[in-house]
Structure formats: structure tokens, C-alpha cells
Image 1 (tube, rainbow, N blue to C red):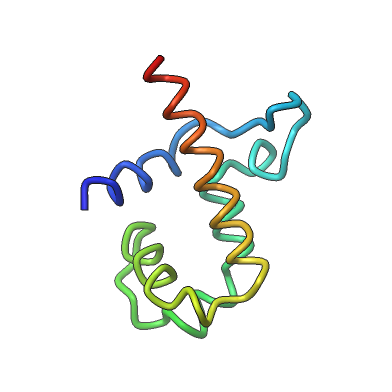
Image 2 (cartoon, rainbow, N blue to C red):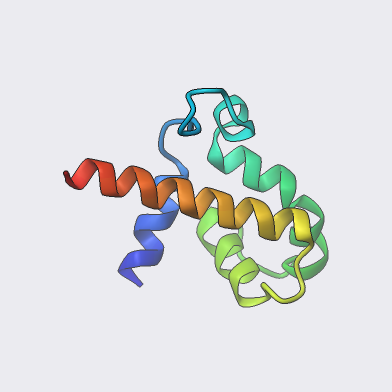
Length: 92
């Protein structure tokens, strides 16, 4: 549960930038907005009954990860990788 909270709080953190320094979709929109955009249809169709707010929505999408669109799945994985990388850098 703690890892989920850390993940969600990191989603709300500053925009992400790729390792090469070039702007990514996340850096233009912010990680939360990029996920919301990529997963908008999945949220409507798969998680319409989820409580409002990013935590409940992400929990629903993860629970139904086998049913989400490829775009949503890809964005979730990319965001998770970027946040994990940022967290590792902070610990150093």
C-alpha cells in the first residue's frame, strides 16, 4: 500500500524529462495529465464506477490491466519507469 501511495504522489510531482534531456509527452503535459489523456477511454469504460480522484482511478486501471488499451498500458509503464528512476536518483 505504501508503494502505491508513493507512486501516486510521484505522479503529481514535477514533469518528467527523458534521459537524453529532450522533452517527452510527460514533460509537456505532466505525468498525471499524460496518463489521464492516454487512459481517458479506459477510465470511462472500465472504471466508470471508481471513486473520483487519481488514487482510485489508478487502482482500478491496475486491477483491470489486462483489459486496458495498449496506449494506456504503455503510458502507465513509461510513467512508472520514469518515477522509479527519479526516486533512485533522489536516494543517492
